Amino acid sequence: MSPSAISTRGAVARTLTVLLAVTIGLGACATDDTGEPTEDGPVELSVFWWGAERRAELTQQALDVYAARNPGITFRVTWQGYSGYYDKLATQAAAGNTPDLFQIDDNYLTEYAERDVVLDLTPYVDSGELDLSGFPNSLVQYGQVGGRTLAVAAAANTPAMVYDKTLLAELGVAEPTIGMTYPELIDWASQITALTDGEVAGTMDPSADYKALWLWLRTSDLELYQGRQLGFGVDDLEAWFELWQQARDANATPSVELIKAANSGDVTQQLVATGDAATSFMWSNQLAELQKHTTADLGVVSYPGDPQGQWARASMYWAGFRGTRHQQEVVDLIDFLVNDPQAGRILGTERGLSSNLEVRETVQATLADKKMQASVAFEQQMSDLFGPAPVPPPPGHTTVRTLLVTAAESVQGGAATPRQAAEEFVAQANAVLANG
Image (cartoon, rainbow, N blue to C red; front, side, top):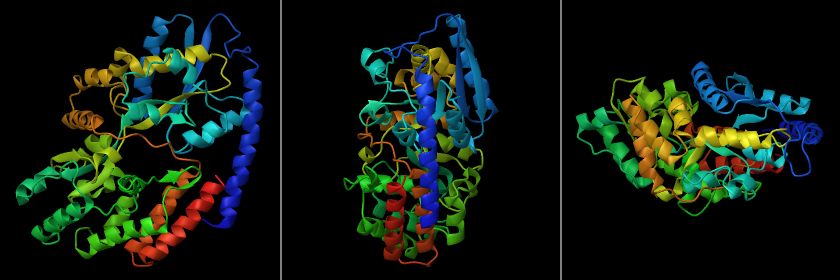
């Protein structure tokens, strides 16, 4: 990213911060000194999320159940696709129309927390009014910023390596296992490439995948971030790029063109679905979607490395607006959406796996899709192996992800050495984070 682009982003952020501060100040006038609502009578809560029509239908059904149980509470809902969602949310905040309850993800949670947009839920968690006792501990942690609970996981997932069970059975190759190391994966993948005469590569090259890098770093007690800077250095990233250079040299990975197509993140371009590689590096809840694009039977396992490097991640969160007139109602609604068995059955796995483990079991019993059942079973298995969650990413995370793809592709294509790409990435990423 150029210095001018970084400067522009910083200017926009500062402008939005000022506007949000004014907006929040106005919103807070609707509460007394304790933060409790000053209004009596009917309550209308505004709710905003991204997603497709199916998510909208299911969410509305759950809200209807809540409204039936709580006469006097109604909802004003808005939803849209992910593209432009955060632009609209920022505009709403600046105009004084921030929704009482909104969906957010880990790309933006810290940013909105630092701008005091989100409601501090810590007192309600401490009192038990917002019950997170049924969540995996790392999933609770991943909604905390600065030691405060500022959002609650609407659903959960974790990084997962999806693999072609059919191909492995045909080749007589053992399936990958939890705890497999990256060198073991590369040897395993090279064998598959050789057995298929190069028609199918053993593994996708995930060097551009921030999830894979993050988990690899955690096996060395490092993190992707340390406050408002990277949690690793040039030498560490060079070693990561060199690992995958060695994998390409060993014919464990496919062509650069195929790797780049999969780097887009498009499910339809993932190499385990197109048949170009025996594995793809995805999220656990994407198994069922990937299965729709191939006749091969797909399986799921953790990313290579110590499984304690992984954690229960919020696929997305519910967050309340700090200036809402109806804090108590917002908190109660969040508690309903994540803990109520009927709400869980209605919402199913549309946002991911239920955050509450008991609700997840209830939902699992209703699933007809065998791959969704497999996703739930995998996440349940991993729940006992997860390590502690890191702090959610700082502002600038989305740009850092893009920079990593650019750096990795420069190495994949031979335009830069691992060292050159690592040096450029670290300098650019730290500049973005400092101005985030």
